[in-house]
Image 1 (cartoon, rainbow, N blue to C red):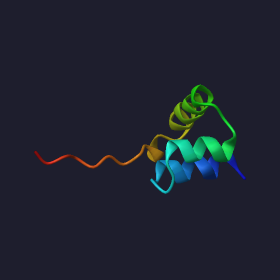
Image 2 (spheres, one colour; image 1 turned 135 degrees about the horizontal axis):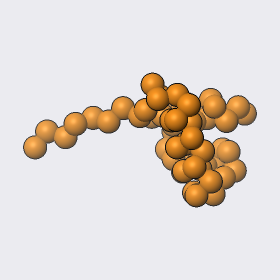
Image 3 (cartoon, rainbow, N blue to C red; image 1 turned 90 degrees about the horizontal axis):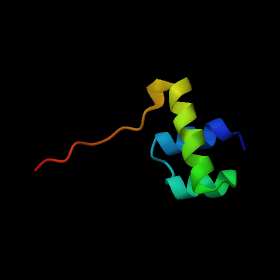
Length: 54
C-alpha cells in the first residue's frame, strides 16, 4: 500500500496513529518522523482539530 495514502487516511481521521504504524510496519519514532515530514511537504493535510467548548 502507498505510504502517502495511509498517512492521508490518518490525517483525515479514518485510522488511528497506531493503525497507521501497523499498516506501514513502522515503530513509533519512525512513524512520528514520517508524519512530521509529510506535513512539511503538504501543509494542507494538517489534521483537523475540533475545539472543546468549556
